[in-house]
Every structure is written in C-alpha cells, then in structure tokens.
Image (cartoon, rainbow, N blue to C red; front, side):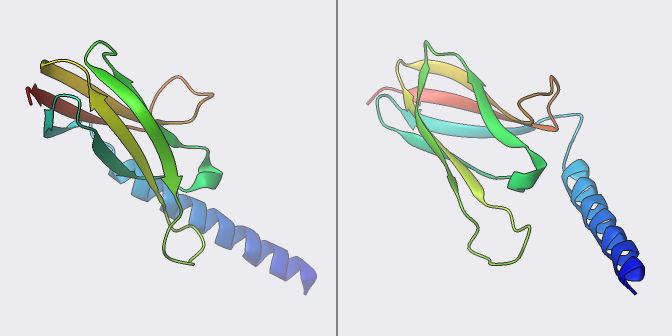
Length: 129
C-alpha cells in the first residue's frame, strides 16, 4: 500500500512539473514581446510581471541603460489565491533620468543559468515634464 502511494505521488509530482514546464515553455517566443511605455521625466513608472512559481528558481531581472533609467525598487507580491503553485507578481519601479528613448529587457531566468526562459522588451519614450 505504501509503495503504491509513493508511485502515485511521484507520478502526480512529475505530471505537475510537466504542466508547469509546458505552460512556461509555451509562453516563450523566439521574438520577444514588444511593449511601449510613455514616461515623464523624473516621474516613477511600474512594470508588473507574473512571477514564476518560487520553487522553480526562476525570477525576473532587468537589463537597461542606467544613463536613462534608475531602478528605484522592486518586490515580489504573493498570489491572492491560496492554491499551491499559484504565481505571484514581481513589481519593478523605474525613474526616468533624462529625456529620450530607452529600452528595458526583463529576463526570466534562474540566477545560476546563463540563458533566460523568457524575455520581455519594453521601449520607453521619456518625455519632458
């Protein structure tokens, strides 16, 4: 009886892992999604991304030109749902430093891996006050 439970439990975990991989993998595109943001000089703006399930090790990080933008703060918001495996959100707050155009690449990856699972690209138009 115990052996049967372990086999079924292992199959359930393997099935859950496969579903997570398929969902995250299906969202990956060879062409990054483009997003446009119009920002006002010196006024903070947010980028909010669905965070991967924490136990997978994936998290979002930002790559951008620090001459145009400053990452003021970022944090993780827990999911509202109590369901196991429900994704939370990662929030990033940027402040435009000078007038012009900038790009932010948001990378979903594990810190110990060199390649990302997904990239979201944001084109930022920074307007004067």
